Length: 315
Image (cartoon, rainbow, N blue to C red; front, top):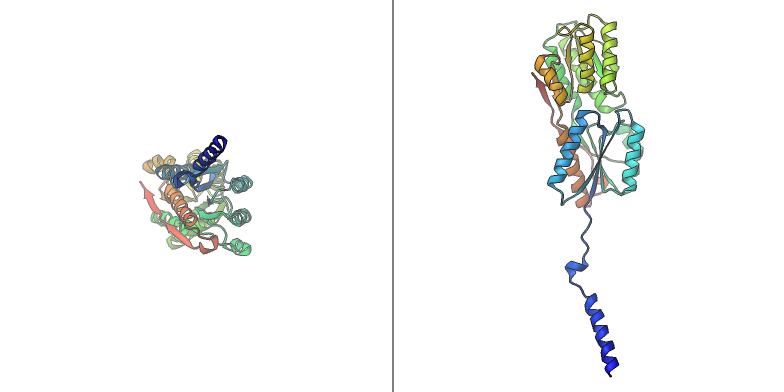
């Protein structure tokens, strides 16, 4: 009888241990993981984007975890694809991407969507035809680049005379934002009656922008202005204009409003730039992705364009 009581006691103790409060038994659900994949972090624009995203995550640390990545230069498309593949393996819940190439990133974006990852496109729009071919819908959060570039072009146009020769330094030509900015510059120059004598790619980079600007100044010694698709290329063009002895004679506009361009706006080496608010673009993309994840929305239910603001910045 004594042994039976002990067994009963042991059984009761075991049962008591197994019946835990619901708050203990329930597992805290893991926070969503959001991956922000950008272009070159050598470009101050994308550092601003990353900083904005990290500040947002810090302020909402209980809501999500952030993984931020970028590539070494603007043309490193293969490595950006690898980063997205790594995020798929890491089982992130959402991917917010500024693609280095509007078409080349579409297949790996589809792979992410097929893996159940919510994808939001920022900064540079993925190619519509390529998305349609893959049968996927990806919302775009970003500015109207054509409109933004026209703001800078219109401001420049007021300083030009009809028939003046100008040149455009374009970003990576396979990106939609580069193409749209070139169109915006061309719209403005047409209205001003200026003559666009050449459009050449500076690959978004300072060094390449410098080389292209130097070549343009050599080939067209009577050129009156250069319109650069981003401030990095404008920085390179500033050096080329100075080296050619044409400082103050060749006008220059850029795009992005990075900190490095501000002293040049102040002293007139750069006439104007366009702010497209990099940090806010990232935050907008993250918030849309998080809402889709928490509300368990499907990728196919997302789509369309969320246009973000642009502003002309002058001296």
